[in-house]
Length: 289
Length: 164
Image (cartoon, rainbow over all chains, first blue to last red; front, side, top):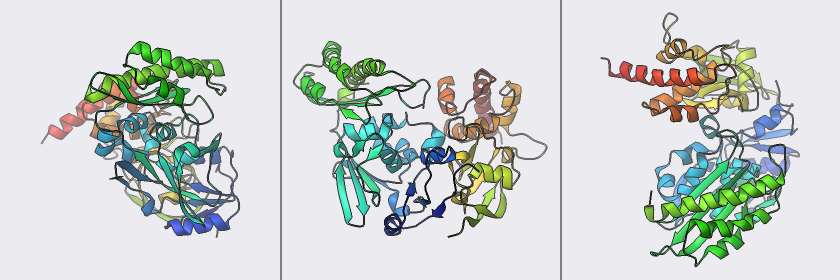
């Protein structure tokens, strides 16, 4: 028996869950459990109360609405993996999902759990940054929407109050024919990425870049949009050299260092993976390969 | 709120009604309370895959679930894979014939993982298999025997399906 003692609650409605969060001190929300359960097993977290939201059916859905993919907080990563709509119209998200852990963890892991855990190298927050996703939260004061750019308050800390619950996410679609590329560097398939890059491109008929999005995961304390690179790319004719030059900017990023890689190595990966993601995205513009 | 709860679940076709401590992981519950020691615990934080079970038909780490979360659900462990006491499952036979195990510690997780994967991917490539078992660590075989066994099992399952 590894987890420390706690009181266990399994509410079946969002209102009940929010009520418990408001009432209980030192409570943790249990979603898919693929991060919180290891932390409990290792006694890295010691909550007095566990609020298991797996029984809240209303938090598990996947639909398209006004040009965006809308999912519940408890929608499983598996549901995105096997969704034809995600594959067809949100291919960056689909490619990223295939890098999230393993099938055994995607079967349980959730969209909301990954966003709230906010591991710097997690794929779903990286895509959320890339497409300017919106996170919906509910609390005692009602509902509010948070632009993903404002969502990370710091290292593994979402900008939500202790009595607020993430209930859903909105991933805006890019137009038909856009290019996408998600690449990551890890020691083993499914491991935490040491660094990752997500790229989206829109080009005109002559290969001139109309719109670009480039996001780095695992490099800084939270996913980073490389706005300067995006700006430098718009108006240029796409080519590997153009991408390579623009991505040099990524070496200047303030990178984290840990047992897996020093900061300088992450900065190097940032430039290389960014170029690869953009090359992949360019190669897929207009449905090419 | 008490620290224990009554749960009812079905494991390998058999129904269990038990009182469990809420902080018990599903893996520890099955091994320690029910004596179902076929499911192995390696890392106990979701990395090694030895504790993989099928939860309502889908592979999951039993060390990353609480036993109370299994209330009302159906579980398949390595003990429930063989069709009878006398006969092994084609996947198990393929593991035996291709040196798919040495010490056997990772085998319960390998088998349950492949049991979910193979029906969805009846003709996998070697690469598909390697990705499918990337969440299961084996420290003996170097994986080659396991990959061979999985590819062989895919053919055996297809032949079995085609047979009248």
